[in-house]
Image (cartoon, rainbow, N blue to C red):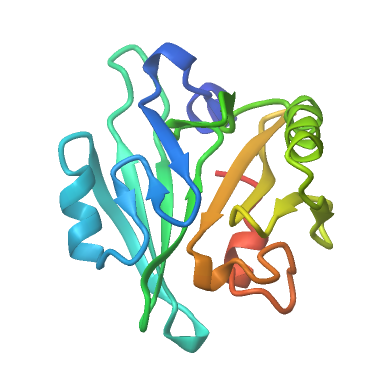
Amino acid sequence: MAANTDTWWGVLDEEHRLAWTFSPFEGVGPLKFGMTHQQAKAAVAVFMESGMEQGFAGNIRLAEFWADPPLDAPFFGPAVTAYYDPSLGLSAIAVNALRGPQVTFAGMPLVGQVPSVLEGLFIRYLETHEKRLAYSQAGDLCAEHLGLVLRAQRAGDLVLSRPVMVAEAWSDRCGDVTEGFIPREEWQTFEW
């Protein structure tokens, strides 16, 4: 029996996405860097529920938040993945390209975009602000001075942008797959 690809790879229309803003080193939407998991759950409780939680090496914890899909949407899945450092609290927020809120920064939508188009816009932003451009070993654009990595995520036959925003304490080498603070599990996420 074939899987229903509309369920697995469905992408929310823009009008169904929550609208959030990224403030470097402060937070994303209602999620603020430094929050405990309980505080983060309370901050998004009106429109998301807590999903899977697990721990990794170094005591980093991951928690997913799931948003209710629109009634006519046949798909499901996590909208946001939060990473918690035991000494810092909420330290990284990854927004799912398929189902996550639309996060804007400097007027640019960061979620669910064609990576090459978003990369062009972001490069112009960095050049205008005379900021350094860097790439991860996986080819993802990153800006340490903002704590932002523009990753890619599969959406069936497409690839869409999945931003990862980090607290200032995690910004050093935030695009470094081997030496940065972002857990290996995030770098391995390409689907779902």
